[in-house]
Amino acid sequence: MNMRHSIITATAIAIGFAAVMPAIAQTTETTETTVTVKKGQHHYVYYGDHDIYFAPETKTYYWQEGGAWRSGEELPTASRGYVTSGGMKIDLDTERPYERNDLVIKQYKQGHVRDNRDDQDHDHR
Image (tube, rainbow, N blue to C red; front, side, top):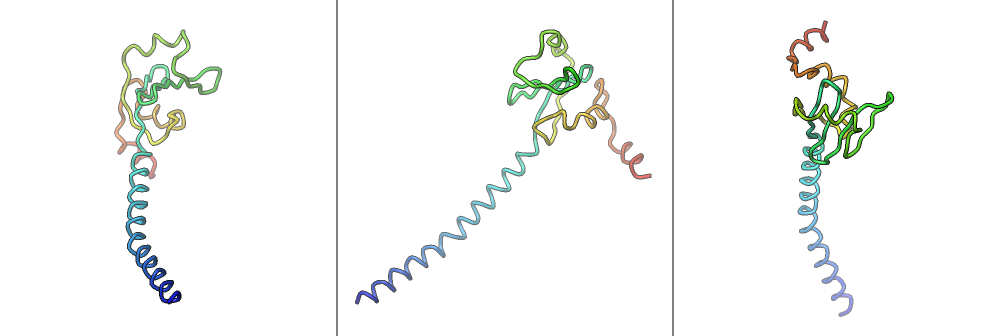
């Protein structure tokens, strides 16, 4: 009788796992897809005249100082006047906007948005 009880218990546990596993797999797959989509969108305000970025979501500024990129909740006193107006909203695929600074300068410097088709024509000679 003990052996029969063990077999029935083991069978019930196996059926339970079989029913739960697809739901766990589905949840994991959905979560990964959602994370991937959100990871690629980072919003910034770009001040092209001085290459300053502001991330509104994290309230962080990014600027160059002494040949290196710096970040913080406040700009140095001398740079604060540059961000009162004229910023351009941009979206990048990185948490550190200076990693795409060359691309940003090429497309957005001084408020001039370039047509990507022009760049493609030159890149595919």
